[in-house]
Image 1 (cartoon, rainbow, N blue to C red):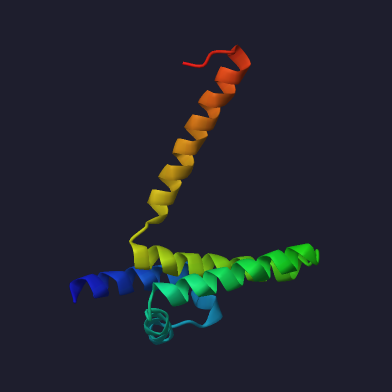
Image 2 (cartoon, rainbow, N blue to C red):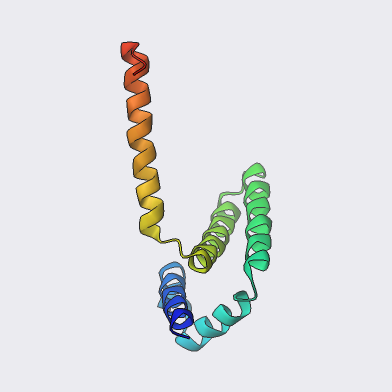
Length: 116
C-alpha cells in the first residue's frame, strides 16, 4: 500500500507540473486520472504511441499550435510511464549528461585523430 501511495504522490506532483493549478486541476481530479491510467503499462504505452503519431502529423502539417498541444500530451503520457516504471526526471537528466560527455569525447577523438 505504501508503494502505491508514493507512486500516487509522485503522479500528483508530475500532473501539477504539467497541468498547473491555473487549469483547474484539483487533487480529486488528479487522483481520478491516476486511477484511470493505472490500468497498466500496455494502455500507457498505447497512449504514448498515439500521441507520438499525433505529434508527427501536426508537425508534418506545419501547425505550430497543434504541435505544441500534442507535444504537451506526449510529455504528459511519458511522465505517467516514468512514474509507472520508477524513472525519475533526475535519471533522464543523468542519461543526457552522460551522452554529452560521450559525444564530447568522440568529437575530440575525431578532431585529434586518436581512438583510445
